[in-house]
Length: 167
Image (cartoon, rainbow, N blue to C red; front, side, top):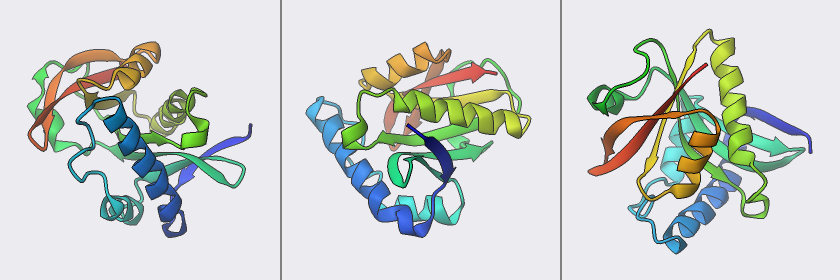
């Protein structure tokens, strides 16, 4: 497999939306309420692309994963109920999703590895992320990737588990 991690383009949006729609359905099938409130949606993807924060993981020409990657841009993290490991610059990532045919191939971890490289290339030594309290797969990925649970943040009225990894 020849995986590349690159900025998403407008022409990628339909494939990204398909990946996210399937992820939304998987979350529902798992009994989760994460992503069951109209978020994410095509407008969010378009905003990510316009802001140049949307990234795709590709296998050749096929988009196999998606994530938004931002630097120092998550206001809700200022309201953490808990304590971050660091208070310096950080990279935050949201909306990690893997294409249906690529589930179970550790590609979320591959995306995180690329985000770590992005972070270090920008001389930033902290990654922060959050997930729903019932997204056991992502919590497991965070823990296996060296993230530490730091507390609770709230998005759209729902508590989320916040994690940080110091690079």
